[in-house]
Length: 607
Ligand code: GCU
Image (cartoon, helix red, strand yellow):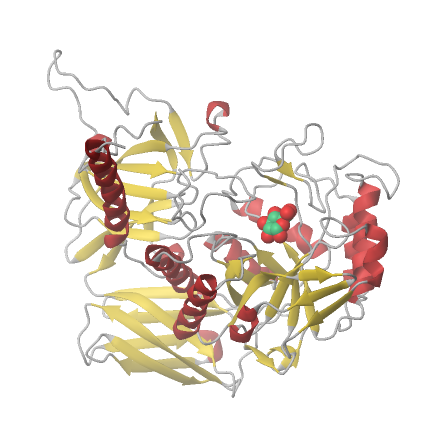
């Protein structure tokens, strides 16, 4: 390669790296409990420009343009050359992925520009934030032609301050979303789920007072279930400002003062609390007042902990009767966009007899978690550190830490969330171990009230499945995936398999299962038939009865879902068919095998 070429390539690589840093260098801010704040919704119809080369966003060297299409430039005269127009472009609905809104975008990976006009009336002594529930995968936000923030991470919320660029009357917002997969992304290039791009969750404009509540945590203390501890942080407050916490139904009113950093420590005695549990998902209205800011939340108080090899909810050993649920709308497909989508999925799970769901492999909507709070379903939440990512790249660790922080900040107030999971099926090597140890300690440092786990690979030797990933040392609950009878060995041999773990910790089977095309019937030897899938499940349940320290199981998974890796014509057609229910809502035979086991409490060796 000639020197000039080498220099040019070096410049492009440097620019792309700086673009990556630049993207991360200005992280968006975070409002807590945004779903309970008064907001101007910007959901609905937006104009959309498909920009396959990212011409309106990136310069030819890969760096991000200062304005690009974010300017929403209008021709100044009939001779003026402007080669884009939002007003003349088609529309997309927000929230929603673009892949399932337009056939020509089903496989699209690249940049789509969104634009919407809105009216606004500035208020004195307030700050205005544009709240985006999720944008997959990178987003660049412009208001009235000025870039106000950017964000990387397809499944976590972010807030961009717009105070200084908004004016009275007409305003417009432009958001560029780029769902191109990145080698140094989180997740990276290969995932067994559809790379749905777009503004996939709610977008709104939120006003807060100059001094506002930007973080809080109120949780039941593990040692005494009559004490609530935590804090409230007031952005912009100095020492000695009053914060009042009320829990009217528990007869609690407590006043505390902020310290120099704006943080008020909270400690409440609450002897008569009704504790949150699946069979009694009690939520309390909690009101927080700080100066002119007021927030109300619905919080369930419970404890989750590990004691020896047991998982304890409110001090009592539990067995997690789970199922995994991807963030895929039932029947319609695409990302869930409504409470109806979430309610259908969680109802199907509840009807099967679950008390627990794993929401793989990325944070799902706050709406889904609020529903789980109300329905009494415990939840495993996960950051998309999935399969092989660049574990030796410091920028990738920073991105994973950011996403973990964003999800803990958003969901720390939700009783249903009992696990933070830091990874799924990651290869065992020193770089990955160091990366995940760092993530685990971050999770613990930010939230000591929940348990930390990860879905680890297991290894099969003869008729033994061993759980011996070194990461288990750092986890509260040792979770592992195995596919005996599907990827490993034949279904008939599954019943003879022994599962051993090298850890004296609670064991959780985070994935097992098999595929079937709903309505395809044959004998138990015929792969893809419902009979084959049901037989694998029966064999698995037989095997699981004798597993020591098994404290939960999580079949993979509730509903068929779109995946670019599943192409078998007539059977998969870009669906992963391991659902117990088809993408059209048909319950397969295996669903009823699991339902019987859960309802009759014959699963595993604990109830
Ligand atoms: C893996 C992985 C899942 C995937 C599943 C499968 O365990 O964690 O994301 O969909 O196996 O192969 O169906």
